[in-house]
Image (cartoon, rainbow, N blue to C red; front, side, top):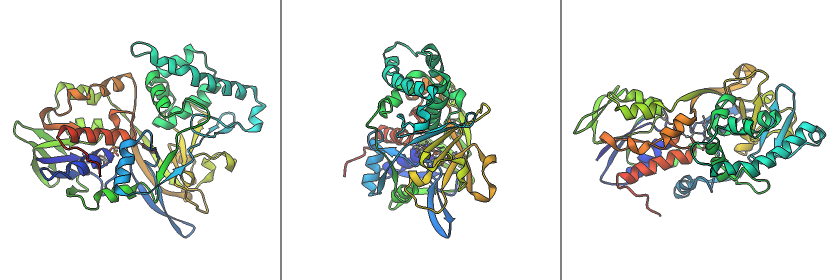
Length: 418
Ligand SMILES: Cc1cc2nc3c(=O)[nH]c(=O)nc-3n(C[C@H](O)[C@H](O)[C@H](O)COP(=O)(O)OP(=O)(O)OC[C@H]3O[C@@H](n4cnc5c(N)ncnc54)[C@H](O)[C@@H]3O)c2cc1C
């Protein structure tokens, strides 16, 4: 069959890579940008006369919760390295900062230990670890995370300085969105990523030399016709074909896999069905401005408090997630000045220290979108149209690859072990 894939992030790359191995299919991959990767975006920058390949988007995964992605890296012989995934929180209102030894647990600073509120927060973290899993036992949708925390009378210190920064960092979500997340959804994720316990945590990993190395390895000998710098403009479906319009004109395919975001997919369909409009329309996106820079003022003041993720609690309520990734920790890079990716705090960065900037769209999860996620079967594979994308699950790399593998399987293409 002639198969078109729209979007070259992991969700499209995975589908194109797998399906193109089958000699019965010819795959054409349309990508709007000049490069493939989507949220895999490794930038080559110069600092102190040295070159560094720094990830501005996807960088970290675990073997346990990303089994398909691990398998992909193994098959491609792409090297990875263990990284220490700590979370620091800096409260811009009180000036308090602390560093969790591992995402989900906490290593107290001696000075903080003298603070009563901080001690209470430590006790509440333990309580949350113990009690939150009970949420999963309840019937129905259950409370939002905000409702749950209020019902259970957690302190504002625990909410503002622990749960919101942690959950916000995982889903790039601002306070209001964190609170609106269904409690069960959050707890299920935290539990499967072993973040609801003290002591042993999952080992996070990053790709040696930057995430773009795996995209290069996928493309090395693949038989995919790449159409880079080619945004798809419109998709029309007939009884006997799918017509894809781009700047190259209109081309006919037997099937199309939409591996762009839900809102983009909906806009491309010339005549979306009622169900496509309803489900894709329920999954909204939020814009994040990501800046790669070397301004250490965006990290906690004390260097030993730096984590891989550094959440910032803004003095005024913010409708965006304010987070800085320390790429030296995440990618094990040794540079004379720190390499930092900061989300949504651009005005505070010294412009002379900015190396690159990007706008990245991330799904907003709420009851409506999570309800839509469960109904993918209702539109997937209808009228020659398939949907692949991280947004169908938790929004992580494994989720994108998983939907890609499932679409391939539905087309009778299995991923054989080598
Ligand atoms: C700052 C940041 C950090 C992240 N870090 C991690 C991490 O460490 N670990 C993790 O698991 N996840 C991380 N994520 C989540 C990440 O979004 C997912 O892991 C995954 O990369 C999303 O893949 P995707 O293929 O679904 O979407 P995308 O990667 O966004 O790909 C969609 C592609 O579709 C293309 N496209 C759109 N419209 C058209 C069109 N009309 N025609 C042609 N092409 C089109 C786009 O250009 C893009 O390339 C991070 C996200 C962000 C924003």
